[in-house]
Image (cartoon, rainbow, N blue to C red; front, side, top):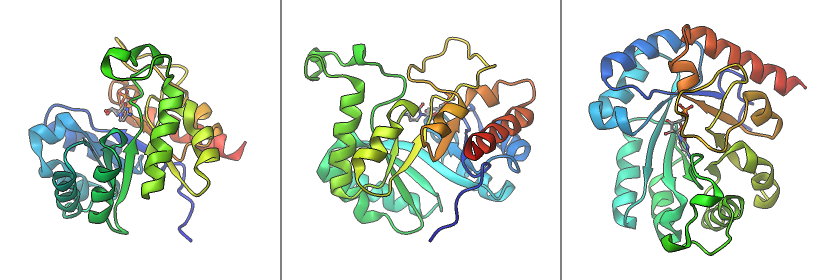
Length: 243
Ligand code: C5P
């Protein structure tokens, strides 16, 4: 059985920075404080696989490649295959891509790579599920998360990105071991200017609800002392795990 992740392993820092030099700066500063660095759309579009290599070259942390793949099955399968060459621990695909796309993604994965299904973005709330966009009238985000999780789990996906609010139900309804990775984390003493996140929780609350990994970007990146901000979150995770 795999060892339990430590509080530090559970913290994923989102490298939401505009260029490789800033990424390297953050990797060097936070390398000993977080379990993983998340390379997302902004950095990958600018720096490509160099950004992933920078994490491997300057830290012992893992890489979470957050490409949120959503395309025809063959393209997604080939993209997952390509991502494995970069030795990444986590890779995201959109659950809304449907069964055939997820099956294709799973075909290309392996024991070294955990695929994570993005259920519903944490920036979305029930009001955003406009029937004009094809959503059933009255559908809530919570219901949509559960529907997508169950469909994806039946295909074989065992990891999900969701908000803290859905973790308990996902674990209850999935009927097997499921990994949850939770963004939208906001420490109680930190506010984010012009925040676009809707379904948010403190690190303590997310861990209490059963989250396995927490994704934190701006509350660390924009802190006066990012290393201290990360250390405080790791402490909070450790406390919550003991409670
Ligand atoms: O700055 P903040 O802590 O809001 O960063 C959250 C990170 O998690 C961003 O990089 C965002 O792309 C990512 N994310 C998310 N919601 C998802 C999946 C990923 O916020 N459902």
